[in-house]
Length: 461
Image (cartoon, rainbow, N blue to C red; front, side):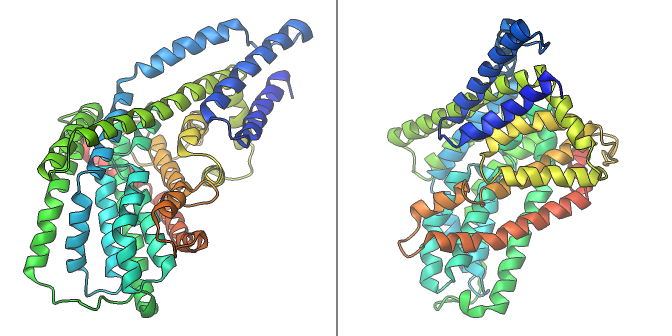
């Protein structure tokens, strides 16, 4: 192994070790990059190695950062974040929850199904995991516990339904993935729609089966009434505003009227209109939403800057070729290699946030995927269909990371708003079946790639 290979391994190990110090991840990424640039320069100067790292590397970092932050696609990030946070304060979810209970009241597990349906709608309207989980927890957990639901089923449904926002478009994670893989955001948005719906359907099938096999853990409401047209009409009225916003954002992208960046502006404006319509907007709320938007955007861009430095130094050392060589040497076929990669992403999700994994892992692994020679159907209209398919597979794996301890953010979001009788172990037990369901959905999408590529091809066709 040459000096560059040693430095690549040293960089990765240093990053992993420093993660456990609790220091901000953005500073760790940038600090490790600068430290190993200095080590490489000193090694060339005093040991006669040829790493290629010197003060010019820092100059390249500045140019790279300028190009990254000049990217118009990334403007969609703060817009979608603002849209999600504003809708969280609009009061629409409360109305949908009340209406849905009347629609599914005669079905065992009907309240949990209502939570799943609202989770899908919130995912397509907001894409903010924390907001969705907290909102669903506050609205539905007391009602499910009062009705006699088993604690694991109740909390597992809320956690899993809330995480759909990271996959179903408009998703800020898909925006980041498109930027890192140089793919059209519209391809990923359309490609993620069917897999996201599949996951939601798997949740509902599980809840119905659970209610059938264990009726005592998913009882019917005592005050259930016959299903009337008025209940259906009430659901339609409450869903209509959210559906109109989803149609305005995603529809404008799908039919080519607006770019994702322009559609994010439509979504931000639409969220303000909905909040005004529900009389839930005032200066204080508007100020809080703006502050939270700035904080979240700053957090993401701080990691983006650090990850850009880290990835550049790693590539200067030949890290992408080094890692590609490791995977190419595995004694498996193309799908076996992808399974290993997804397994690695799944395990990294136990310890890292999706942002770090997206910014560090995806750019390094994309050359590996393109070299596998996969025959993924692009239907003659999609460029790099294998990367679009792979990005959605990684997105599903990263969605699972929100449910896996110790860094399962959805678990801790929910614990923070749960009633006192909900223990952390109840949440751990509750999310396990949904993790298995998500891995089942990952397997389905992996076996039938057209589930990802068909919709983008229809839109472009």
